Amino acid sequence: MAKIRTQYICERCGTVHIQWSGRCNSCGEWNTLYEQAAASNSGGTRSAGKSKSKSSICDSLDLGSVDLSQQAISTGSFEFDRALGGGLTPGSVTLIGGEPGIGKSTLLTQFLASAGSDGHRCLYVSAEESRSQIAGRICRLGGSEISIGILIASELQDIEEQILSYKPQIVVIDSIQTVYDYLAPSPAGSVTQVRECATRLSDLAKSGNIAMVLVGHVTKDGTLAGPRVLEHLVDTVVYFEGDRDSYLRVLRVIKHRFGPVGDLGMFEMGSFGLVDLENATGVHLVDRVEGQAGSVVFPALDGRRVILTEVQALVVPTSSEQPRRVATGLEMNRVLLLLAVLEKKIGLRLYNKDVFLSVAGGIRLTDPAADLATITAVVSSLNDQPVDPSFVVVGEVGLGGEIRSASNARQRLAEASRLGFTTGIVGSTFSDSVAGMLTLRVKDVRSALGYASLTFC
Picture 1 (cartoon, helix red, strand yellow):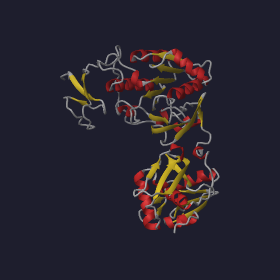
Picture 2 (cartoon, rainbow, N blue to C red):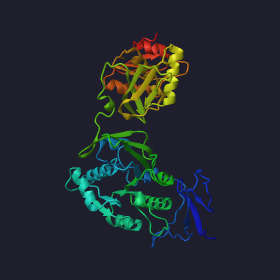
Picture 3 (tube, one colour):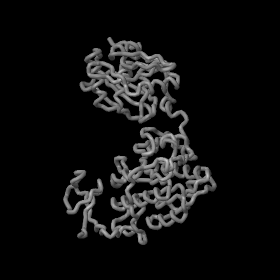
Picture 4 (tube, rainbow, N blue to C red):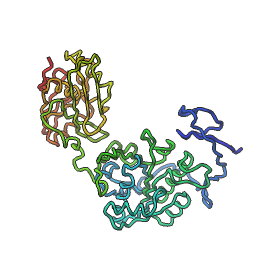
């Protein structure tokens, strides 16, 4: 078969093109193709001395002959284990991404320290830091000595050799974009290098039954850098999120082959590293002032976890011909729709009022179940009438002013009840009962405002 001398790779999606063109046929982006010498069919990118193993077809699989008793490796953190469904699975590859300085290296150093103290053989491979920098981070975390191996290397062949020699149970690669195969002609961090290195390391983890964690860089829009195939190669994809000016950190699992996705791990960044957040559900209600007009508690559902947050509204008169509409943490188009419903169906006069809306804690709500809480907060502020602080409000509002029940309403109300709330305003189709919670079922906005003791005439 003839060899392809030159090929073109899209930096955006990693698609291989035989001929150059100004636009990628796969993702549609312009000027993203770069030239590369194609690998021959002789396997030139493979390490010397390695031969391709033969595979055989299995007609039937005897589950009794497969070892399913492997226990997940605990990370030493309840929140981390919760997000991963119990911990890291031996033989799996986990990709964790996050903005620079968010705490990825801190999180993984604490994990290795805990796993090493439990008797697991750990290896930390760093291609970005020196030994002194790693030692300094360990000291800042309050440790004097941890039983893990540290390798400062960036060449893929050297990393493979050391892993085979050291025989670790857990390996952390920090980061995959700085590892390169010297046999490949492209620079470190390119699409080809990231794909080749991730593939080889993934094969090594599965053949050696190693729990491997790859740290990935992120782009300006917050997605993992490199080809999309990188996320398909690994077993688990985790995003570590948070504002560097805030103490709160969130671990979000978006892909997991060994358990459910959508659960969150929540941490507090302190002077001695990351600490599990004990009251994660009500963390955004700590500074809440009860009995304040324009404040309504909404049980938001993030993945599979309920987070109670506070929707705040401030409605003030204005002399401007164009009243202001400002929303922080809410979709503006949704807010304008809800204000139109209040004017049309309830008869409220908002055309001469400035309306300011905000969600406490910096949370961004895209859940339509927050509609009723938003409307209740606006009316509460407009009439200067506080909503009972023991109330939680959840429901989607239609254009006709009708209330639709929210998804997982029972789970939301149960978590609110656990935190001491006693009354929930929900859609009329909600039929379950929640221990310790009085559920007020409403059909439309007018009846919901009446249950909340708010006037609207």
